[in-house]
Amino acid sequence: MLKFNKSLDLPPQLQWKHANEPELMTWSIRARNYNTFVANLMFSFMTTVILGATLIMYSVYEGMSQSWRISSCIFFFSLMLLVLLSVTHQRMNFAYRFTQSGVEYCEWKDFPKWALTFLKWFTGMMAIIFIYLTTIDPTFLIGALIGPGAMGLMYLSMANSKTYQRMQTEYHHHFLHWKELTKSTVATNRVMMELEYSVPQEGSIYMTIGRQYIFFTPKDKERVTQLIKNNLLPGTPYVFGKVDVLN
Image (cartoon, rainbow, N blue to C red; front, side, top):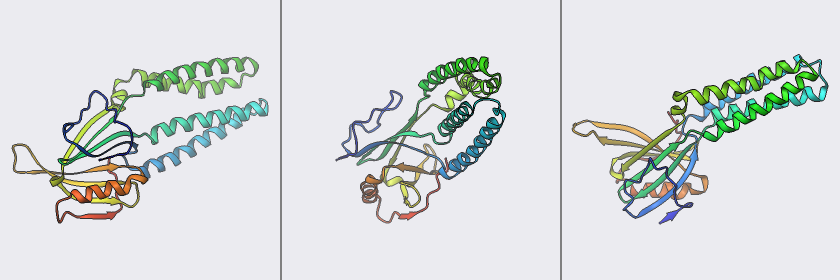
């Protein structure tokens, strides 16, 4: 039995279906379960936009002292970059458990309540600071509208939008018998595997065809891929190639 890390701490909404079976391997990981190329491209584009907004902000602040001018622009750029990263580089929690029956895993993402608390207090503190600075130099009023004002609107939209909170909260459970796997691809462009499967539809002669992704760390790659390879039915394709995550 191989255990890559400590006991898995599943949320109460998720339970192992085959918890009574001895495990062959188990681990948990936080991974980006989407097309990272598109996300990175979006991040690069938006970083350029934020940089442009920062330069405009710098030119507008020409009446203030140089130190405050540079500091406020650096702060604005860093904050917006942090917000952008939280959007384009989100990660999903995965817990995997392999048994003699097959591949079982849970994935979940809880809405980050701490982010709302942090954003609320941080916005309040920055608003107070900018209001004080406005009494020294009125040009800081523009910064108050761009910085704390934008963060305040972001907080209100996140806190009051149930739809947004549901989008940021997910709980899924998956199980595949070894015999249902029709192809296994070890990704050459990411640290992961793609498992193609064919599952009978309940009460139907038709099959459900799809694919699941298995994420792991580089140091665990050999053990994970070898265990899956050893449990595939004879003749099941086991290949290496580029995998495009379609989520």
